[in-house]
Length: 348
Image 1: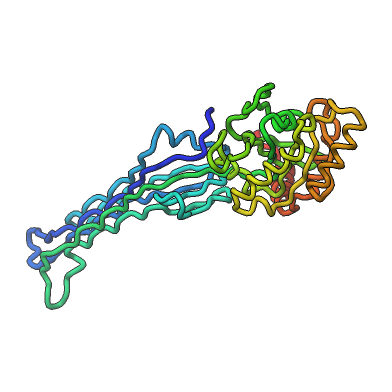
Image 2: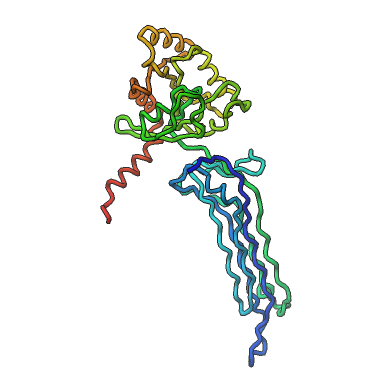
């Protein structure tokens, strides 16, 4: 399944059915009077956050969603049928934007969240509604209201607890593969990762979600490389894990490049809790480790951890440090759901 995190969708709600102008005409009924029914309401367009989706690929093959219009009213006080609604099923974490791609109409951050994007038109009144003591035979009815037509954008921002940052070939995918069941592509050339990957990691009987995004390079906010379009997937993370390649000859410059791109991107990423790790230490001797760690700590101004995704050295300590930074509230809901499933009676 391909990954798609931005798409354009055209929606239109259904128009309301027109009211009916009708009179009761039956044998032996001298004063039948008006009996025109109302038109049915048009169908609305809704967006619902559902489970089991982590891409918007379904909207690549269908971009137009038009709800049905309501049926006109009929005689004998019969109301027209209401048009069926259209439901857009989107992954949790999807932002719904207006046509300008800036105005946020809705942010689908909770499972089962339901938002109305276009309301169906009301059905018109039949002539029965206009009957009064002084106008007992009205010959007018209202037309139904037209539907709403609009263009919207869907932008997916994956909901994860930890976001991986680093230059290309910093070892992000290797770390994700070593600590979870995810199997991202790993190779010895830059930009191996072309789209975000998610992995569930566990430490001390606690699980959390880690998001790996394509590597950043200097000038990514200006569109260089793959750009910074994937940074939106770590906006919702509780903590950022910054991996720095220990075998690089420009250690400090590599670190400052990522920090500069975070500042240029904005959206509060630079203010999030961040853990810096000197990666690929399996290729360094003890003296090199100590020297590079000290130099990086001076640039970071905080503690720097050592790790190797290949040999898995220090991975458990890094996972525990990440777990300490994640708010318990993000895990309480997940734990409660697990306990509820365990306590539920078995059913075939």
